[in-house]
Length: 160
Image (cartoon, rainbow, N blue to C red; front, side, top):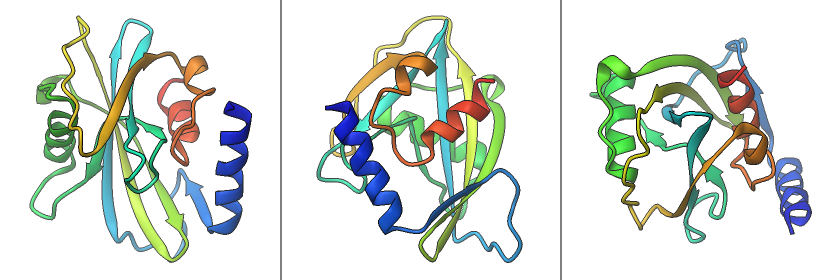
């Protein structure tokens, strides 16, 4: 089953022109800023599965979403994590990890990657319109999941 899912994702990548960069490419103009946050407890981190009726449904990703025009990336990631999980992250515990640049067909966006360390596993209340399931996982276990595009690259760059 996992093999088939990865094959489908591979086919999706062939059908759509998708590129992932750690350095901003020439002529790259970001049309949207996206934020994600890896919530880490011991050797595990939190992933959410997108509802099947949503864009990229059935794929796993870290909590996050679009930055609003009036927000800083810090504000956006704190808001998005709370909206999706009801977990309150304190600004002083938020660590900026990296940013990457993604081209999806003719759409360019910048992904800002954050991390925070939790002393205890919090109670998670999912925003059911967005996500239907969550999992605490390791990097090795996550590689076997149906990850959203480029999540594997983000993981490698966030958990070196």
